[in-house]
Image (spheres, rainbow, N blue to C red):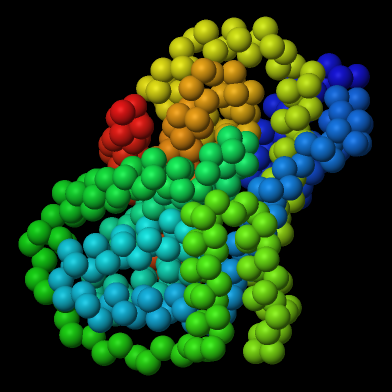
Length: 404
């Protein structure tokens, strides 16, 4: 019954978009896995075809980078970076720039969701100790992480997928998109300053604050930073990213200082399961529904125009989330003449679209959930008020930059 492929795809994407299936205890990862199994059961794919649909490069790259991030986090590296930034901030505007810079800079090479997980609580505790309003700084962490992650193939999961599907070299991707990230960070700071003038334009200097010593496992931190630097060098040198990440991650597991169980707990296994399931679900849709004629018909709506493609990508990313959006756009992008630029636009728009609403990216939800644990509410409306102008301005700027 291959004709069931489309309903299976739609139901899977609805559950992935909602995050749950009403009345059932199933999450996004479970929905993707059930959807993949249903594609095999209905005959849209046989088992061997389903296995072939798994993009091993993306899964291995994400897994390897998770190990690197776990080692950095367990070593105390992120706390050291945050403390160094705090010591140099003497005014609310300087503190804002520091938070945006740290969040975006780390997210450019490490997965943005993890950076939000690491930075939110320390930043919130800091601004509360300083007696400053937490909202603009929480927005800075979330939105800067999304914007900074657009710069490289390892900044976020959807970029990793784009890199694997497109074959664009790490250096070429970064050369095209780091200006988008830099301009985006500037626009984010501008919007936040204009939205909170009392804090950033009329606010006085920060009160003196004693920075407590930061505990750091120095040998592990140095080893982890060295591996990260080696990985970045290997990426730019043209080494296959998945291979480099796997070797770097495996090397970090050879340690006498950290129990392997601690690193294993840091791995987001559900994200890997969701990716694997979605690869199979989309492959089933491509094989049974997305014929060459249908793909060409959709392409005739002007997807070759950067503005049209960016708008569609942003809209789809907010409907079903950015990773599923990238996967479903694959056959249409592959049919375009300027394939490389199209993939860059998809990567840019799917990432920056995550700043539109609180539900637009996992990074945003992590910030909201971590803030709530400390009694601070980041509401949907408060986020939307800043998210709309930031998303519109950054996507327009990104599209213009990629058109030339």
